Image (cartoon, rainbow, N blue to C red):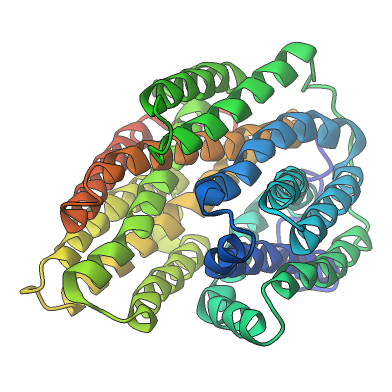
Length: 454
């Protein structure tokens, strides 16, 4: 029996016993959300100031790549030494990365900062999941993940505006330089909560796994760079990158994660497909709205925010609505809603269709991913009955990074072929591709089966 199993199954995440760690968990999630949205907002200004437009895609791919390596290393470390040690190391690396990015004199130094930032963020992500597994009983975890999801809503509403305001008044560098203040506060809240840890040696860290993680990270960077079609040999770069990322990635994950094997592998496969489909649609939906309907960016932001709000609502319903008590059923329902919602969102590229219709469908997609995403997190932690929370969390997030980055890279290659002549068609095609990925999630969701949890 683990420390988590021994805890009472009643109470609230905000009671006296859990309030400190809950506030810390919320603060870390808020930090991740604000930083991601703020950086995306100011990145055009960054590349203009540092004369680095050719490295624009690499600036986004760099933290994804190093997160892969960090996830592989941090999982076993968290199981063996506890989440607090991983949290400490991750925070230091994360802060060094954002500080270096904020002080970077050139684009290559900015990329180095992004690499460090990604490594620290990957370690923090694993530590956060292990904290949730060890600090709360299983029956409380759905509510904690709902709180985690809600931490993304406020940054989605105000984050881009704040970042743009800071960049306009003080300069884009202060968007990065201000992040460590939030990070240290969140770290202190989690660290001071006194999370108990029971050491586990289930996971192992070998040179082979580190080498595979490096190969996967290099593959993600290579695909992203080649996907811009600025290299003469870009098809070779994309092909080699895909082989590296997928070939190494499949060996880092539990057997059957990408082939629909029953149980935990299908949980990973389903969440990877759900997340990738939603992200691919979210990246291309603004193009349909701006190019197809000539909407201002403020209106586009409001549409995307509606999806963030319903994502939070879906997580809350999954945690609190008794009719959705069956976890597997709500994952299947959520995957189906994501597919239906994205399919309806393709209407955003048809000006004759009232805008309210695709906006409503995007809200449906948000509701679905809110149900599925948080529930799969709970299922994976529930299945780690041997205390391997770090390894399980690492596999879950590693799969997310690999699948999403690969799908986005392939999407960028496809869109580049339409960018000059028919960008609306290209964006619509990619949103349609997102529907297909979501349907794959519906298929793998049907194969989720729990054997270790009643």
